[in-house]
Amino acid sequence: MSPVTAIPACPPAIARAHFRRRLELETDCADVAAALGAAPPDFVLLHAVGSAAAFRRRHIPGAVHLPHHLITAERLAAWPPATLFVVYCAGPHCNGADRAALRLAEFGRPVKLMLGGLTGWADEALAFAGDLESTSDLDFTSDFDSSRDLDSTSDLTCPREDQSGGDHS
Image (cartoon, rainbow, N blue to C red; front, side, top):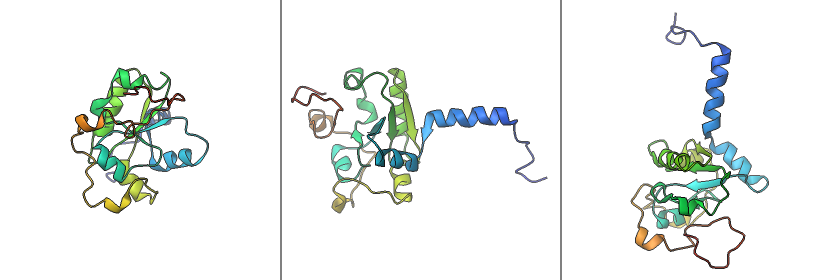
């Protein structure tokens, strides 16, 4: 008996429930890329870590920058309550996406975590957006400078049709 078979596999019904539950909570970079490349996405892709400067340097195309510790009911009011959020962070070494997913769930919002984050996106050889010329000092897990970034509408794009310049914070 090998280490693989020493513990028997569970019945298929249990495996089905387990893997379905995982897919209810997670997605991957390839699925997100395919969705972004098709019709307008049916979710909001949330870059949940780092400074606004790091986000400007490199992020996944179409992502909104909202660090997990800045997720509030007021910020979430920009999207309808049924909006699905797909969160990502720097990669498997970072728990920012988990923190964002928890906050979103605590606010009653549907959420999935994109496995791999920026590291997974790079591993899949998918294109990034941003000023890729200045990537030598990327810092996706640094503290967010709220005094500089909270009031900047260029750092947080809300999916409102009314972009009349009102307060979107």
